Image 1 (cartoon, rainbow, N blue to C red):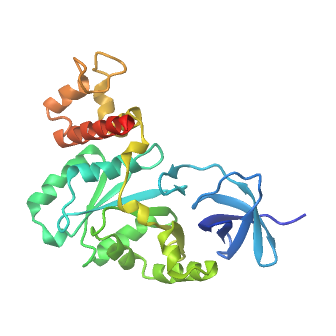
Image 2 (cartoon, one colour):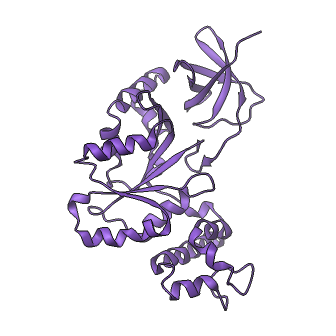
Image 3 (cartoon, rainbow, N blue to C red):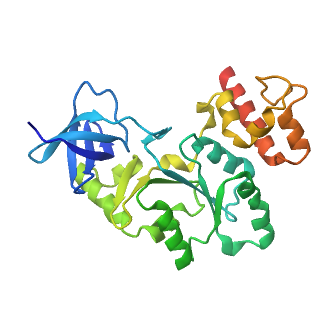
Length: 292
């Protein structure tokens, strides 16, 4: 009987699947059986080996799968928001949080460029901590050893994504945390014989010293919330849930409906108005997108 091995998909190019063995960390180039419909980066698979190549026979059920670009089985998303140059608006930050917030994971917010702002700004950003998001204030350019050790503890043994607009400091932070990541990128590029072109596609890089799978993808520099329905958007503003039981209508969308518990909570400063404004803007965007 042929031995089966368990591994994770690091990279996909055309019909080639780069898999890392969970037990040995060996990287194998695989094909998949035709009966397997779709595989995405991050999938956990079972494969058999045939000399130097492999054949994927089964894909495990996913815990989750991020959209556009697709990455499966993500344990933690870090949303990086810069405090200055560029300043990230509440709506931009809320868009990232809504996009990545689901039933299996809630994003951690890293407010970067702390050295460029005053204490007043830090106080303003604490509204997200009060909402229940885990928040940390850092300087990626001058990352302290304390913050570096702490963040490495947060990624140990996990599949992680760093998301945020261009210029917020994601690349700088990743290089400070994972200086060996650039070497991993080169190794996978060589295996696919595509050189620098492969950096434009989604990939996972295995960081052995922390047992971390790091997602590298240009797609997480912007998000498109029109992939979601209005109902999904409403549910992703999790702070609404404790107030919507006070709504007159069970299917209240918290828009123009009378006696809305959420709108009353906004008026009473129990829900930040900036969050509700972001919600209205997202709903409007979805409605306009449907009319196209």
